[in-house]
Length: 393
Image (cartoon, rainbow, N blue to C red):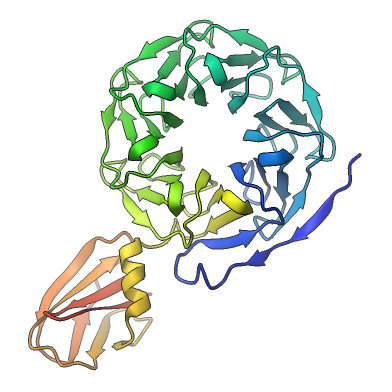
């Protein structure tokens, strides 16, 4: 039995005041490389130098499960709230929620970068030099599978018991349809390093990687199309909690969101410039991201607002909106009388819903037809942009 202790976490209020991601220091300065929540309240995170963390209250406090004998773990996966696998310099398993950990022989000295299970007994791990391992007895033993490549493999994902995908260096994407007995090389159309793969169903999948790469397939991996990410940052991890809504995290605090199945991506305000390595959502609203220097982020509103809106909000102080909240009509009042300005109302996804020209300091707007929710008002004149927020109830 190893010593367990609760690390009291401190909210980084100032840095994340407008980001809609709550920042938390989980008691370690080591980078956190992977996060997984098997339930809404129970989650595990792993990283450098044997870092293994657990929360049972959905983020507020984290227990340090680390032991000095453990090496860096790059990936964590849970088959239930108590059964957890972590891979990296070795394979670790706990069946009691992290109280005790077993080190499992893996038959390969190569580092492992990703682990995925299709059920309680069957799982896969992928890593350096084309390594792919498989277990059929709940992780007690692992067998090496022929991948047909020497590329470093960074991510593995299975859509069902037989069909799985692996992404790796030099644009490598592999697919199996027979539980890993054989792997076909798919044409990704890129030589960029591919770091994360996620499928929303048997046909539709996404891959992210270096140089802002986001790829999508709609035919089970036979063809891949590049999507415009709007960034050149390395994109480390992708997660889709539902078919049309997905999130990507990466270097320099990058968090991207799509709500149209990848057709377009919004750059969200994370409140940090640290590298983010892993993202996991338990539902479309609640998600977590982890990264350098022990940082853990959480959102409860689907990632919040596009960064451009947040930047404008922080600088605006002369737009008054009342009544707020309102159900039928609002009055917008500005301290500066505009000669002629464009007034726009946008939802939290940045979509413009109402637009009209105004030339008075006080304007009434009918919001009766808007759905319930949070909205932004942007007033654009020839000299400045002013932004405010209201709630339709």
